[in-house]
Image 1 (cartoon, rainbow, N blue to C red):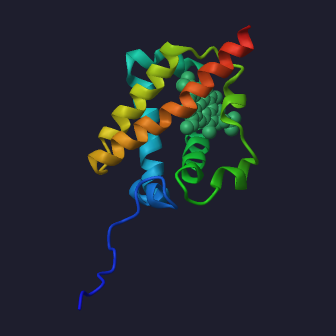
Image 2 (cartoon, rainbow, N blue to C red):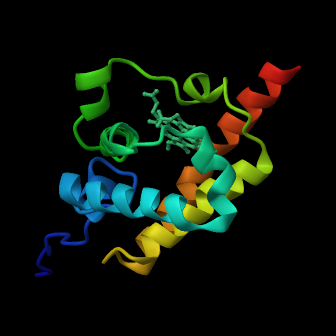
Length: 145
Ligand code: HEM
């Protein structure tokens, strides 16, 4: 008789809260976002996008960490504190084109490299983040027309 083995593989990233867990839940996401803004603060390539942000980054850190928490399948912490959000809409007032998108993604790539994540998860996240980043570029271009 063949015995049924329980499937012990974790669900793939993007299913349920698999991404939230892979990111180290709220503590891991907070670390990632702090590393992300530290990169933005220091990378010459990010100087222009850094200038679009407030001088003190604590609210920016809080907002992005809370947003990513829900976006990765965890609790909806952004909505709890700040209410509903449309990512393209909140960025429309900024001059964000391909160069700004690339600078933002570069900060994220470098921040991800510092985290104790599996390489496959780092790669997955960077690819997924390109989706809202592209939507922002499109929304900002439409705003300029
Ligand atoms: C494409 C390049 C991007 C640039 C240049 C950019 C820049 C900015 C700027 C200047 C702000 C306002 C300052 C602040 O409130 O902290 C902001 C806010 C924010 N961004 Fe981005 N951003 C980009 C992409 C993204 C992406 C891909 C996400 C999400 C995955 C994101 C999530 C947020 C959130 C949650 C806020 C706070 C919105 C609010 O509550 O007002 N951003 N971003």
